[in-house]
Length: 268
Image (cartoon, rainbow, N blue to C red):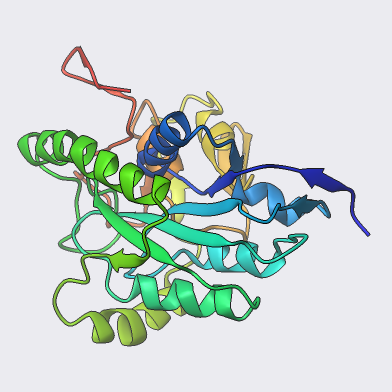
């Protein structure tokens, strides 16, 4: 039996390029709740002790119109001392979330828990590994980031008041995207096999450092393992733009939340 850790109210998060981490930090500051990386659950046998009236929150990005597979795995392995009295999630998405709320709720129901609330927040696009997908234009990125402040404040108030309900932007054809496209994506594209580094690589090791799954080792050039989540942190954080995904990322942009653009510091 793992050691029980007493935590009053907690937020678990998963983030690749920083969008979800930023949202989690805003919730942490306003709700005074500690943050914990969901990936730590994979290597821990800790039991998280919940009290009678404690909240439990999850913050994560939407990948292919659903929660990342690794987030669902982490939920299946998370050990709590009792059922949470109020469980919620906040997901970040570039455009729409599909049936993310439905998939998440089913995942926690398999643990015997009930999700009372869920929200989506529009954030800048990060997916670049298929034709037609790229980061947002600068003006779109700026607009999304500005609007995210108000959206997160709205969510903070609802969570603090323990309001039940779901407000996730599903978008068009959500069933098709989540239950047809997403399984194909997870089966055929959830892999690091097409990642490589060009001759522009300077062996700085940043890709290894930012990978949330510890899936990269740098020996002159990065080598990817088999625990890829397609978060694309390695691609977006590379200072030389040397990380590529086959030929799909050629001439495409980079994005991570706390970077600088054209000499101006992005808000943190």
